[in-house]
Image 1: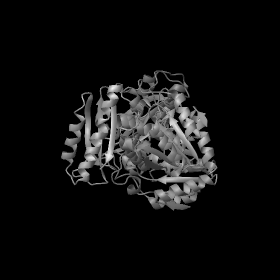
Image 2: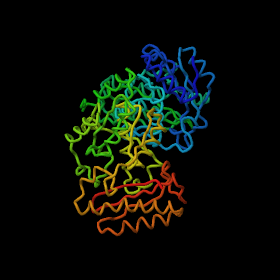
Image 3: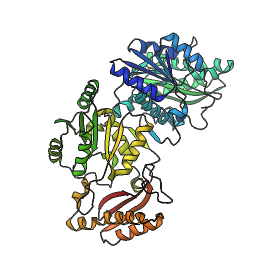
Image 4: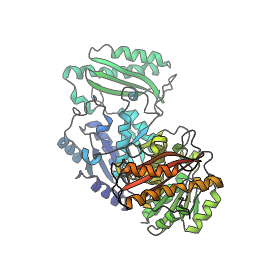
Length: 280
Length: 280
């Protein structure tokens, strides 16, 4: 496995790999890698000649109070996981390489990014689409793989990629969950034991929503109310949103369409922000 | 010469040309081609295997009152000029191809785009950087060639290209002028005979600025005042700005540095907006 920090070196390698006709798959991460990331790497492994994992905590997608400094970092454990999972290139640029002094260009998606997490984190997806555009130009992948846990991120990225004519295929892998259903996530490391236990309520709320739909419920308010009620039973959990949206457009659904509608949740568990979703 | 309207067809051709190791040069135009464009084509011809001219009047860079509908269009004359000048591919997509219904992604440059034309046309450069990003992804050029007349556009594009890690070289060609010094420009076609005559004052104002600097003047206010005075002698001419900026950063200069400082002018000649500049 090659470890690269330099943007120029990564770009040169990518151009040369493309010229040799190699297929490149990219997984864009903020590090603190976990089994969810590993499943993305495995999907990439099965479809590309060269798997590149980008490991970069992107300051532009954090607002001032959103915990950029506290975001978990463990570069050596990340490298070990990547090596073991068969990653070819671990690209971990510095902040100064990615955003040099005087940096002033940004990419925005202005429809799918507005709802859900976009309401409480208005600058978040601008950071995501900016860093993704940079990574697409640096790594030149044929495919990029997201996790379903970050469904809105994947949908926004797909829209930006289509709109700006980047030629890269977007794949979304199923969410990987711990035994109690909590999706693996880098922020889980920030949870205390008690917080971790309460966080289990997210999946129970999603499952209850899915059950209701499976038994014929199509009324969005009903499903949202029940999911919210379940979440509210845990003292440490504060709801940011419970929404039912079209899984592709991220637009609120008036009525549930099984297979298309997605129940999406964001909560604070004390000061840790967690998200999850399920297709109904 | 190949004429292509389809984004997909252009992108496929570009990918295949790149795989064959061909160097592609792009000239992004809004059509109504003139000798200024021809000099860009000649520069491209001398450095690349394949010269692509994009001809697309970009609605996103015009505000509601900025004359998108009135912008001169003459696709058959443009095609004839391109054919004669040795262009290999004329890419003229439709608006629906470039901005399909529901289009929602934009690229911004937020420093160099703020001054000069950015003051009176606050959404203009967002449209420019968006369409350029799209064209870079569609045409995959090794180089892109701008004219010095649009110095701010070239500087903003260069900054966006660097920031977002597009790997394309930017070249800027000298302004091509009519006998009285007015730069060739698509909007010149909108001028009546009397307006056209008055427009000659732009170059006289720029030349006077250059003369002053050649004789040792370094005070920006002095040069701006004299240039403005010259412009004000024509009844149809209203000044939008007369500024002296660093030719690379587009930041206002406190004192003139010959070779680095640029005198930039924008005026209305009645309802036609004209720009020009000279390096001092």
